[in-house]
Image (cartoon, rainbow, N blue to C red; front, top):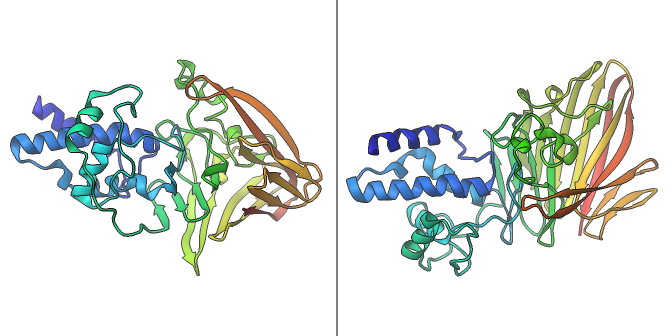
Length: 359
């Protein structure tokens, strides 16, 4: 059994890139990496063999802290959630082994609504108060996942990757804007787990479809699924405190006449995002720029405003808001608002710029 378990754990680790990122989000990091750590520490106590000594494990242990938005919120890409539960025992042991932040709240045996013995037993045996390490970096980049994150008073996250990831969403170039403890320009996370959600009809559900993300629709065509539908990272870096993140999204679409679509993010930590889509087309192409939120935006001729928290500053003469009723991961009603901003990309090269201000 130990031999079989070692091979299973090696297979698990092989699913991670060198950046230690979990494409499925923090919730699935808890599930998979938690049980990996529980087995590894039991094996170490029994045989002295230390699976946590592998270099990649240190990077995996740091994943949730690299995608933190602040105040207990995390990047909710894929089938993740904005406020996942992180077991106190697991965080304590990782803090002891790797110096990652320990749990910030006193644990409760009711934290895990499934009452999984692996988590509960290690929280009972491992949790103890530990000093909080020095302030973490405000900016994170996971090159294997293609995720860029910046946190502070305001937070921003955007993703590349490809459209055949575990628990995949068709979401290349999607982004989140977080202020006052809430993702206002949002990611919907996991839909309700029905049989069809994991079959051919997966992308008929709002949450994993491109129409449930803040990404362009080109000539009526949304992004397609598939490993070859991949975002190419053209640039990532910090320029005087400004986060620059550029993605080539061309392969996500199958549109006759589309030569290239490049999305450029410029994030200013004082709460400003400049989003630019650069399009090269053989013919004129209608584009719907889509922005997703659980708050209804108020439209005027020159702006869209999400409850005074985020404001899109742009002339919006033809913009419209669609209210969508779906169910969330737990089967509860979930109201979603999709802002459509039509633009026309003429033949040749064109630039379409959107500025968001956070308050």
